[in-house]
Image 1 (cartoon, rainbow, N blue to C red):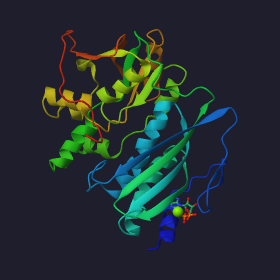
Image 2: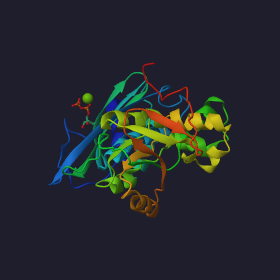
Image 3: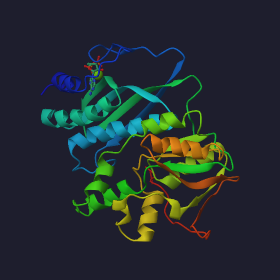
Image 4: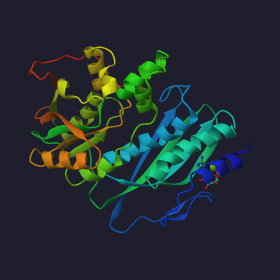
Amino acid sequence: MAEFSLIEVIRERCAVIRDDVRLGIGDDGAVLAVPADHELVVSTDTLVAGVHFPLQTAPFDIGWKALAVNLSDLAAMGANPAWATLALTMPSADAAWVEKFADGFAALASEHHLALVGGDTTRGPLSITITVFGFVPVGMAITRAGAKPGDWICVTGTLGDAAAGLACVQARDDGAHELIGRLNRPTARIVAGLLLRDVASAAIDISDGLLADLGHICARSGVGAELCVDDLPMSPAFGEYADVSTRQRLQLAGGDDYELCFCVAPDRAPALLWNLAQNGCAATRIGQILAGHEIILSDDCGARIEIPQHGWEHFT
Ligand code: ADP
Ligand code: MG
C-alpha cells in the first residue's frame, strides 16, 4: 500500500472536528488558532518498538499508548489537549496494522477531543513520534520548579502496576490482565492536571519511576524530599503480585506508571485531594518536601530504608 493511502487510513479514523483547526491533514502544514489569553504547551515523545513497548504489543495498544504518554506530559503541565502530529516509521506499508494502530490512537484522541492535524509516514524500524499541543491560560502552566519545604508530595492513582505488567509479559504470564492493561493502555491524567492548575506548587508525570521523576522536581525546585514507602498507593491486583520488597522496588523505580506526582502547600492539600477524588482521580499523600537535596525513604514507623536501584535511564 502506498504512503498516501496509509495517510488516508489514518486521517479517516482519526477525524475529530475542532473549530480551531483551520487547515488539517492534507496540505504542507496545518493552520491552527490558539485561543486568546492562552499559551500553547508543546511536548514530544517517541516510542521505539522493543524499547518502549514489548514487540508483541497489539497495534491498537501501541496507538493508544503512543498518544497516552504524550497526553500525560500535557497533564503534568496542567494543559488542556487540543492537537497532535504523528510521525510514523514502520518496516512495511501494512494497512491492517495501521488500521488497528489508528483505532487505538483515535479511541483516546476522541475521549479528549484531540484533533490529529498532520504528521509524516516513513519506512524503517517501527517507531512512533507524537507531538501534542495543549492550552493553558497565560502564566498558568504547572512546572517542576515550585516545590517548597513542607509541601505535601502526592501521587494520583496507583504505582507499580505497569512495571509488574511488563514483568508478567516477559514471563509469558498472560493471565495478569489488569497489570498488563495498565502497561499497554495508561490513563492520561488530564482532568487531574487541570485541577492542579493554580493549586499545585510543582508537578511531573511519572514515566521513568517515582524516585527518578520526583528527583527531577527536587533538582528543579532546589529541595529534598522524604517518602514513606508504606504509603505508596497500590491496586488490588498489584497487592497480590510478588513479595513486599519486589513491590517496593517496582513502585519506586519501575517505569510506565503515567500517574502525576505533585507538590502542594499543606494548607491547600486536603481540599485539593478531596476535589481530585470528587472528580474520579483519587490521589494519595506519600511524603513531604524537605530543605536540602536528598530523597530520604522511610517506613511508617519512621525507620530509614535503602533502595539500590533508581529509575530507568535510557542510555545506561
Ligand atoms: P510533505 O511531503 O509535504 O511533507 P506528506 O506527503 O508527508 O507531505 O504528507 C501529506 C499530508 O499528510 C500532510 O498534511 C501531513 O501532515 C499528513 N501526514 C503524513 N503522514 C501522516 C501521519 N502519519 N499522520 C497524520 N498525518 C500525516
Ligand atoms: Mg513528508
